[in-house]
Image 1 (tube, one colour):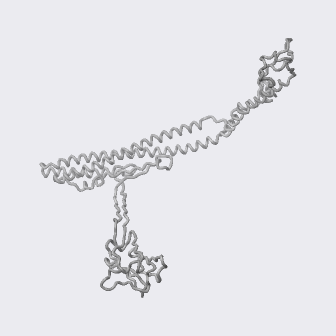
Image 2 (cartoon, rainbow, N blue to C red):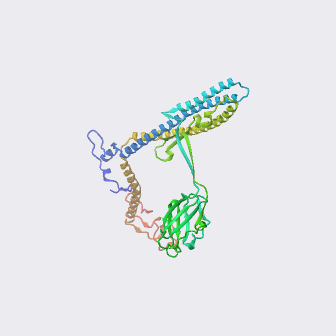
Image 3 (tube, rainbow, N blue to C red):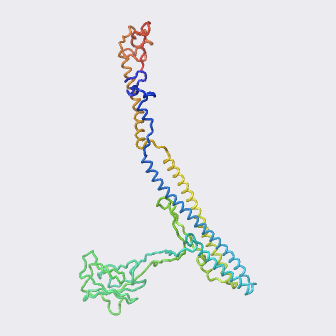
Length: 463
């Protein structure tokens, strides 16, 4: 029904009160059911919580790995401190043994102590372990470095019987051949009876044969004959005569020979053996590179710190002087290892703190999600939002239509035009002549009012 007071169409249900129940006031069943909270299982929230639980578990394992890496480095740091102390004692003993005023017996005592400390360093490196991993002894790895320079082979001193006019377009040697070297002289002989090329390296006396083409190729084309033993290809052109030998006359063999010229250097490979401890820790929930930390620690045995220190003796002034230099090198190498341990410790500690923070945040979010009172499912919440948005746009539009209806009803009342324009609120300007009356002033004489006995009352209508 239409409500003239509010200008809205009210649902019929709102004007139909429900009879009161015995002993209680009247109630609207629609309103009563809307106030009743019906718990509904929110499947979206539960599935999200399950995924969060898996992520929390992964973060927990990654946090444990980060702290394990930090613990391993603390163990390594303690071992390195002990080795550093032993090297400092060895350095002091060596400096004393380098004095020329010591007796042979005093040097023997110093040398015995020196040897014990060297053994102690290897013992510390061997027994410094974390979960069975010898962090300061490591395992042997092979590091290779390769340098490749392409060789350039060319033909020089070409004989007069193996030129282009004789049917030999070119001689091509592969970039990495076998059987030829710089300065080698190669002889090319063709025998028309056998139809074979005979290739001889006169420097090494190596000989190889290959079948020549039975006929010369057409003009402008070539035929390749491969001599695999020398990585050589003979290119034959249209001038080749299969029925004519090209053997050099006796006494002048150089007429069917050429010399190999090589420029460049050979391929070199350097192999280095290193003893290192290399472990990869998973410190993230994913599989990307930033979710992993690879720890590489060089070994800290005497041989790895300085190979010359393994056989040093300080029972003489010259031996002590050499040992002192080797100890200095070992101390410097140890400092590099200590710096690596300290730097990686910072990385693991930072990773552990960040992972713990992420885990705590995700745990709190999951707890809030599961403990939040759920009275309606996620799908229903979305539907209610859409409904609310629709009503927020529909009600104003409905009110506009209702206002227009009210105006039409009032204007359609039995109103008579005024006798003269003098009784209007304002004079009619010339430019207004012939224009439609403005709703803003009185254009019609009002009907008599039944609520009082006065004269006619003017009705002002505005949009």
